[in-house]
Amino acid sequence: MPESEHALIRDDEIPTRGGAETRAPAAGPSGGGLGPGPKPPWLKAPLPGGPAYTGLKALMRGLALHTVCEEAHCPNVGECWAHGTATFMILGRLCTRACGFCAVTTGRPAGRDLEEPARVADAVARLALRHVVITSVARDDLPDGGASAFASTIAAVRARCPETAVEVLIPDLQGRDVDLRTVLAAGPDILNHNVETCRRLTPRIRARARYERTLELLGRARRWGAPEMRTKSGFMVGLGETWSECLETMDDLRAAGVEILTIGQYLRPSPRHLPLARYYPPAEFAALKREALGRGFLHCEAGPLVRSSYHAHEQAARAETRAPR
Image 1: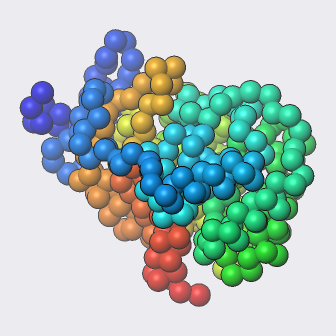
Image 2: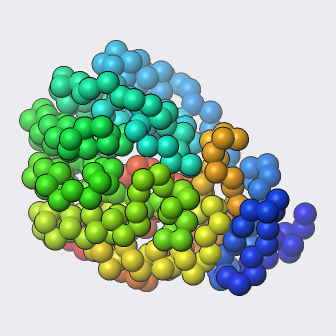
């Protein structure tokens, strides 16, 4: 199909494919994006491999650790692992939620591994990481949602690698203030919780999550965290949101005090997952980044292959450059 046939449409022009509602951005750079179909060339990523990749994989298996890079089928696993960086996923590989966009396996987790924090710290030390990202599956089966596991892992990394910056990407902890305070008391350098999508699409896309609860968690983190701690969030595009909804989401996140933003392309993990509405071209991601920076975010990482932890160390450094403390 010629590119001109993929032109951007207004919010009130809602085409349907097979009865399912899809929406394209209402404003942005000319040219538009591609509808569902073969991946466009800008989404090609190098296949994982090489000595660094193999060595990091062996280290993770040897320490019985999981990474979100593998579990979520991240397209950047080859690039990141080749540079010796990975995002640790604590509390096992089984998630108690079944979000329609996510490749992580849903199931019934078995308890909690109390030795895991020490093993994460060991891996951080062996990799000589300057910046580590720690996330988890949703653990609604645990009384504190896994908050104490985050706190223990932060403490273990601090004790073993005091110069390493620690970023945590946490679940919503079902909105419990006491559990958020547990994580914050451990002193993360960056607290991240992803909004994932716009307000309208949240009920369909995020299992057992609420848009307002995410904003409340981020706002409380900004108010209750250490003054030097940064707050971060991110969302996907290509699920049927409009351009104005992307901008509204940015405004909501800024109102909650979020300082670092990531925006990436939704890629359907399997036919069982939510359908893709469209591919955003690089020019639209560049426009979204300009919109974000114009709204006061200290840094925005926006691009087809961007994920929450992509270039996490560089994100933090650039945020500090824009607003040194």
